[in-house]
Image (cartoon, rainbow, N blue to C red; front, side, top):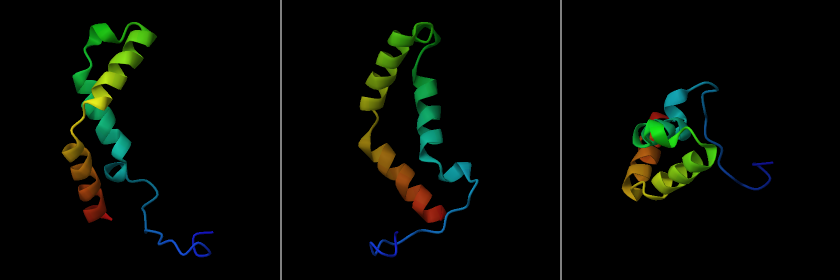
Length: 71
């Protein structure tokens, strides 16, 4: 499929948590959301969304840059 679409495919280790951006994001969000906001699902999801929207764009860019260096 990718060859037909002329897309470059990166070599990617099958099990590499350091290349999994969502793990880094979950760690950040986990540290930012107080325990009292986790007892109610709706409140937790609202807090999660607020914190996610406030993540610095440069932080996300840095995550991607670091990941690309490790590939």
